[in-house]
Image 1 (cartoon, helix red, strand yellow):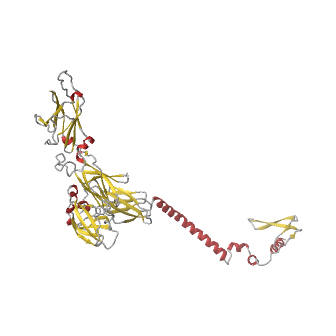
Image 2 (image 1 turned 90 degrees about the vertical axis):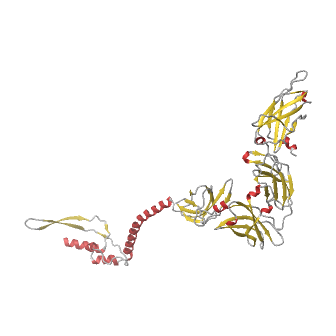
Length: 557
């Protein structure tokens, strides 16, 4: 099978050997030949072209020389070759040392040796396709991958545990492909359909050496009939004091569960490790969907956990395996939040939790924090991610109660783990600048409005007193000009009918003018009078006023 793949190699060492074979009779020279060195795993192949027809009956031989020596030795498998290809895989050499090759042609006469450019086998080697063995379940396929090369491979002797694999899988009835990268030699593909044929192909890689191999042949397998009991799902592990708490979901009640663990590094070993799984203490024949086991059961390291369900008569397949890193699992406890409010923002500080004994958690690992907050009166959540432990969330509403919670994520090449969420913190934002301005305006308005209101109330009370509670005694200035009888008529004549009286004055009125002069010797009064005649206009006066005028005229006469 390996020989059939030689034509598909993509990386090869091409050496152009320029050599000339003298002609035996006519002195004719032969054309140049191109030599190719193909190395796949532990297979070493030399190929060249027979360009000149005069070389049709010639034979070819190769010699090799190890680095640091001057001795040329015959290359096994490549002596007196009549074809244009030879295999020197039987050569025992160090794949990390440089090697030189030389070639000559033999036909009646023997040509001179011409050297091929030196090369290091390991650097030029191509990774071949790995061997694959498949096992089917109802909704999963177990893949066992053997490393490239032979069992006693020389080329990859130091890289057996360093291989990483990629595969492409698809339904046999569909052309849609899914690629899965960076898997170990034993891998399980979940969430497949029962009674369905799946096909896949696998290739190997050495990341440290920057080598990517070739895809192997296609393997197909059909999943089994769906099992009566599904495996447990949504498995999570958390830390509580000095114990681990394992929780999971299951569709049926009255079930019994068991938990097993395995050291993760065994997954890289291509040998079968099904007998390496161990029973988890305190998690055997569990009747609930959780179990608690002490931390000292698993020393520091990375482990795989799996669960199985049983109802007494039937047993489920093993669940999907989850990874437990004891170091980071203990590290990723829920963070502690300290939140301070401003008018339109929240100042959030994320503190590290405390382990038992008030020992602070290590901060040697890069963390990303997921913060979720929402208004207390709404279920609309907003989510942000921060790499800092001190930051501000802007553009919030003033005088609003917000709920805040957070959790930590460790995401790098080694870990992809999240802590549980912290306790929810409730905080109310402070009034904004607009609220302060309106508050000041309100105070100023009140300062001006209160005196005006007091003055208005006083004026209103004065009007009410004047209308409904008038004073019984007129003021002194009214008494001076009005007699008691006139005042009485003014106040009490409202009920009497008012009669207008008109008079025609025909007689001549005499207006007397009194002039008072002061003499030094004696005081005396001097009277002067003026006669006037009425113009004949009507007089509309009150009867009392007419009487008063007549009395005054009589006094002056």
